[in-house]
Image 1 (cartoon, rainbow, N blue to C red):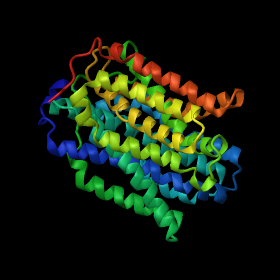
Image 2 (tube, rainbow, N blue to C red):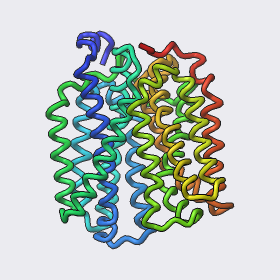
Image 3 (cartoon, rainbow, N blue to C red):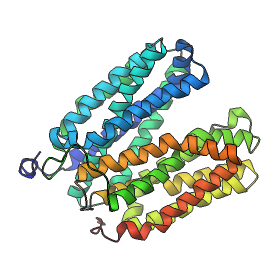
Length: 392
């Protein structure tokens, strides 16, 4: 879409801000709703742990393949159309994931589902940057907070339905109808454009500030992946926690991150993005250091909470920074850092596993803590060549 066509639409207002929050909620809702269904898919398809791990990589592979071109697609067709079509594709695949009985059908469904989710992730962040810039104030943390809220609602709602005896197919249909209702109610307020400049090329290599921001997103997403995949193992193996309590590690992290993001806009307005990267990186690094070095279970849980609080607003601040860089078209820059960052979620568990095999899991956590210190050290470099952030 050309600049003139984008300018023909009214500037994003309150309704577009609400629709952006709903879009983030939808993205987190659908992704998390799949998690409680994984054991059912494993049993139905007769998978062992190794094959299940390979199949789950299909979801990430689909996302990684779709993300680099999703920015250009949103630029050409608009965030509204891309989000509605990608959501329809992703949520139409959930019932297939709930009924697929062979490894091949499950793999194909996961690839397409992942492509839909990856496209949604890019498009919602493009919309968020455009809406935030139009508002003249910091809003990105709140947007990402609704992704976290959606994740809690998706995982919790699906788990509750399964606990009450609903079948996996029924759960996915409920998720699909809930999403359809949200899209019917708020989809009209999504932006019909995806760029305020000319239509971008399909792909461009990240460079300059974009490459730096993408690298920092990689580190933060890697730390989030460490909490998701290794916190329970750490508590049971390294701290002697009972298996029934191991899930509290990630729960503490997720709640702290959600609270941090829902209050993040006020914090970012008060302190500025540079301070968020500096103190957030230091807090998250200190949390992992505490968890790895202190021998008690309580210290580990406190440390995981510090990681959640510290990391909560780093990625939103980095996405806001992308909206103020001039080195790449905005839509392609967002697609690039989303792809780089998401690769941290995918590769993080494997990297941590190798470090744990080489030394120990606490040592692996210390290595991630050292990487988070890089985020703090780069806080000045990120904002050195950017225009000022909205502070009202």
